[in-house]
Length: 111
Length: 120
Image (cartoon, one colour):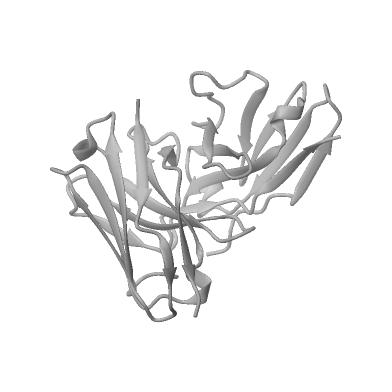
């Protein structure tokens, strides 16, 4: 099954807000209640930053927020900081042959 | 603190086999469903396999079905992935990932990964 569609890269200046989209279908993003988001720093394992579409695990900055509408989920990073430079992946359950499906990944660059 | 530590990666020739392990600690392993996820060099994340807490339910992605076998030892708190008929395209970092117990996220904890390189 194809990955969920994310922009390959998004950039912004410090202090700005950026939004990363994650587009799927009714068989994944649109068909299930929850989407989660992961941040992956270079050479590190992914880290959960958003679960249940909008919730942040303990310790994750409130500059990260999530939303979902139909087949598209979004991650917004406000007050962009240099430390936010990383790859970001969305993840959803799937009713197709794969149990879980990830987004294609978005590289965030802080200018 | 939840800890997942993978091991068993390395260099293997095409057509060869490798067995990965993931040692779990800091939580009640037998109560959680577990997964394997991989990431090819410079590429995105790919879910590979799921095993239920009691091992009754197992799922595989089409890319590894018939070649890889997931298993677990709830006494030794260890997850395994037996990989056979390895191909160059299986070269990747392999992560074990704990399934969400609430269902509100795909995976709530990850190991640090182990690198598998398939090359002659």
